[in-house]
Length: 412
Image (cartoon, rainbow, N blue to C red):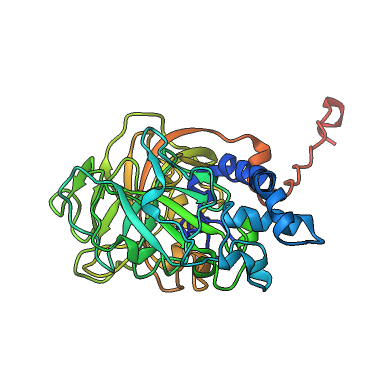
């Protein structure tokens, strides 16, 4: 499909907050409105506690600087709060002597778990993590190159503000040796499915090239994650005995991307599809708008496919016109004629996918064969204004009408 990858980039210092792919527009909008206000509130609270004491101990021409210094020091005097320099003058420069401990952060369980930080700003001088709740299962421990999925929330530990809480809104993938920021992934090595982990990362380690301000962080802040490793089991499994020869096997999940494993053979050159489950709903017609859940991977001979996109990470099905060129040819040609309730596996060669150019933003090259597992949730007629423009049909010339013969003209 013509969609960018929904991979978690964990507040990466590059410009896009891919966490919103799981949290949704509401969460992102809420965080942008509340972060600045929370920073002001934290500064005012700390300033009101210590302003008299600070003015007695040290003269200042800039009231705002004093308030931020009090905020970062949490009301305590320390060498870090009195030293010079732009990062240190705001009082939030990580100081090993004054740094907090992740074990002291309070964890609250529930449908939407969260962390709270107490009255003082929480800063760290190096990355810390702790398991706040152990999983109940006996799944395999996470290795360096193991892809796993998490629910998550993100906090500014210094202000105590929740930037985003995406628990219950879908799952995001991580790989310890490929995650961004670099400090995040290694904290999961050896963890198990079901474990809930709190991780605190200094601003400088999380955003080595800067850019955290657009996400509600300033130099000296701590970025704190709460992440639960998904421990769900597949709801359906399709082995080599269940699919036609040459088709990938599938472990199907309700709330996370499916696991699609290729046979030990080269990818087919032609478009292929097969029904994994047969539905009994309405038939999909050309021009309809269909709603689907899907997982898309790249073909790897004899190996598990690399997920480049999945609607399940956002938790909601996606909708689009079908059979009209709004999506790749492999979808248009395979899904028209199917029924609501069908679960379809589609193997799409490059020419029926993204062509020679591929789709670099999703990691798809021009010679990549793609495999999708698609659940058709609904289909309905598409309003005309939503359809792509169609080639205009030229009016056919009308046959010239022959004048009727009059009786008087006969025989002439």
